[in-house]
Length: 46
Image (cartoon, rainbow, N blue to C red):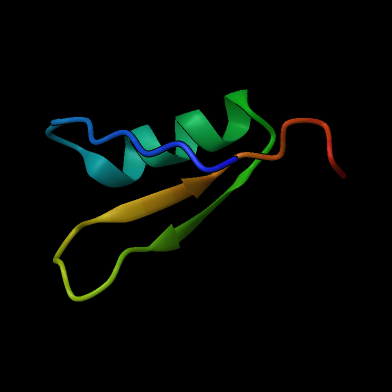
């Protein structure tokens, strides 16, 4: 199942890194947008 959330923050990279650590996931840049990142959640699937 895919869930999508957009969060307005000042420091996008820092927040993405924190979320990826919390959920044991990873971070990747998002599309053509400047300073936009996607957090891929691990959710115990590793």
